[in-house]
Image 1 (cartoon, rainbow, N blue to C red):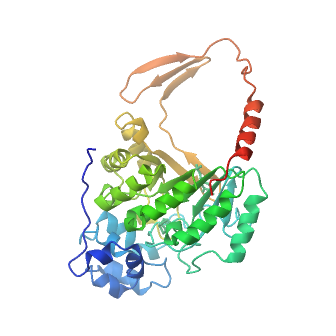
Image 2 (image 1 turned 180 degrees about the vertical axis):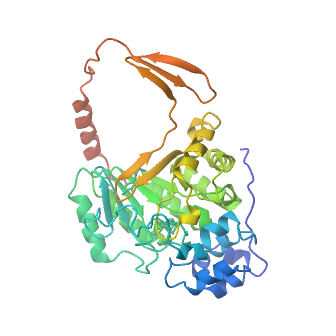
Image 3 (image 1 turned 90 degrees about the vertical axis):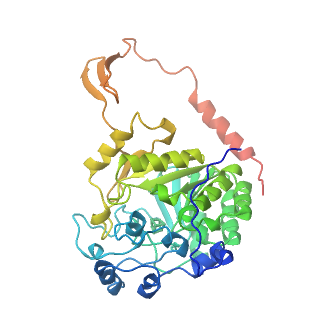
Length: 399
Ligand SMILES: *Cc1c(COP(=O)(O)O)cnc(C)c1O
Ligand code: SF4
C-alpha cells in the first residue's frame, strides 16, 4: 500500500532509541521544572517569570517527545502550547475558573452530565502534557491521579441507573495515561451496562506520546467495541511519522478516530494551517470533527482568537477543503450552555417561501419551498425506537 512518510521525530543524541520508544520512559522523564526545560530550551524572560511564579499558574509538564517538536524560536507554535509565559499571569478580558460550568453539571464526582444522552467520565486528572489553554484547569493537573475506587463505583452507579445515557466519554486528564489493565477494568464495567451503546476516549497521547499506542492497547479497544477515539492535533507539525503509525494502528483495528482542534492565536490561526492539518489527518483516515473557539479559562487571552477571526478562517475553508476534512467551528457557551456551532451564513434574502443563497464562490440562486403542507412521515418512528431497544438488549456480550 502506498503510504506517505511523515517526518520522524527522532531522539536527541543523549537519549537511546529504546528509551525514546517507551511510553513509560516518556512519562517518567517528563519535563516539569524550570531546570528540566533549561536543559533543552533557552528560556525567555517571560517564560522564566512564569516558571518563577509556577505555583500560581497551571501545572507545567511535557513529554521529551513533544518538547522535541519545538524549534528554539520563542514564537514556535508548539512552544506556545506547552511553555508558560508571563501573559498567563495577567488578567484577561474574561477570566473563568470553570468556563464550561462543569462543576454545576457534575451530579457525582468525576461525572459531567450536560446532554441528556451522554456523559463525561473523568478517570484521571493527569496529562502527559499540560496545554496552556486547557479549559479544565479547575480539575486537570491537581495530582489526584487515578479516580478513587469509591468515586468510580458511584460514577458507574450513576450511569447504570440512568438508561437515557447511551454514550460515555472517558476524559480527564488523559485516560491513556492509565495502564491497559486499569483501562480494561473500566471499559469492561461499562460494557456490562446494556444501555451504554458508545464509548468515546478523549486523548492527546497520539500527539504528545504516540508510543503509548501499541498492539495490546488497540486490541483491547477493539474487543470493547464500539469505541471511538477523539484525539487532539492542533498543528500539522504534530502529525509526525510516529503519530501516523499510532493513528493507523487504531484505524486498522477498526477504531474510528476523530480530531478536535482548538483555534489558537500564534499556533494555528490561519486557514492554510487548518487545511494542512485536516488534509494530513484525513489521509490517515482521521475525521476532523471540531475546531473549537478557545474557552476563556484563566490566563489564555494571548492564545485566544476573536470570534470574528475564527469565523473568517471557517469561511475561508468552505468550498476549498473536502467536506469530510472540514471541522465544525464550535464555541462552548460559558457557564455550561453547551456547544454551539458557528456556521457561515450563506442566505442573502428571505421572502415567504423564497430564500436566496450565495455560495462559497459567489454563485447566487433562489430556493423555493413547496406550497404543499408537510404531512407526518408515514414511517412510525416509535417502532424503530422499540426495535433498537430489542437489538441492544439482545446484544451478545463480547467479553
Ligand atoms: C463536548 C461535550 C460532550 C460531547 O459533545 P458532542 O457534540 O457529542 O461531541 C458531552 N458532554 C459534555 C459535558 C461536553 O462538554
Ligand atoms: S490534554 Fe486536554 S485535559 Fe490535558 S492539559 Fe491538554 S487540553 Fe487540558
